[in-house]
Length: 115
Image (tube, helix red, strand yellow):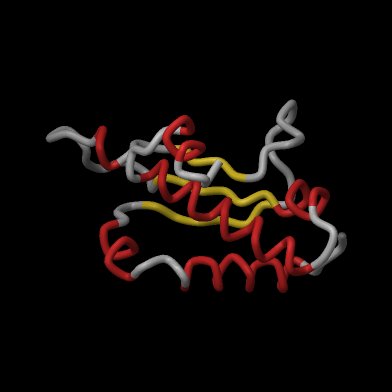
């Protein structure tokens, strides 16, 4: 599947628009990025949360750089057959990585159907 970076970024924005505003309001010190490729050695990685989950932040959490959620364009496009598949996969990946920001681990996400 091929898709322009601009269209893919639009789909990430649309996925974010579907997240309930109450949850988006709770997100703190996090940036969401669209990146073409994952880190070396992780070719199948669709997204990655890097930072300190809200549940792990204590009194000493201050002055740190924003957490990062990276959504990897090329691996997502590689597993999709058409734009509808991309829309679905982007939505799943965005929700999955936002959940990590809230301290939800992979096992729980898989149990909830967001793996």
